[in-house]
Length: 215
Image 1: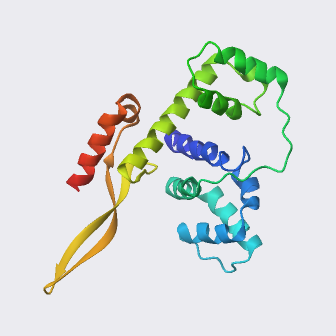
Image 2: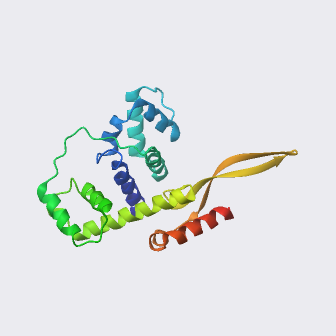
Image 3: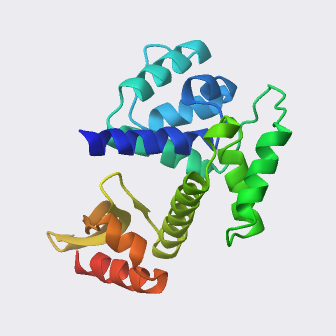
């Protein structure tokens, strides 16, 4: 149960990237109707009405009640779209908070992109709750997610919620002398978090390609 809760929380954090820091319920209101329709179809929903308000209610309920795979599919949809839906609220970051983050970052080995990501991650966290340990943990998580994204692109697929690599394969069939091809989604066996986190990227790509070829 704790593992499932942790993965659901990870998707809550991931979806905020596309809604400018807002949660799913608030951010989904800014998505245009066409995209809402595409999202509903992508995750296999068949609403009674395709009107905007009905779609928003259905998607909110689906996200709230969703299992890990459904949240993974919704997050994957927005990841593939690659669009950020800005918040209409004017955000005024605290100077004290920014100064504290910058002071901690000076003790860490981070790139400018990583520094921006950490500032964004803690933009609504109370200053007194920001610690070097929390920034280090968030940095490790950010680097892991970036590593996964690069691997997914290199291996032409994506990791599902169970850390299996999912991809589309073209399979050939021969029936009654007729040969035809069909695209099927396939999944490799699961890779452990420790293995994905600790193994070099090039080695992981080789292992995933081997696992794909073995299916």
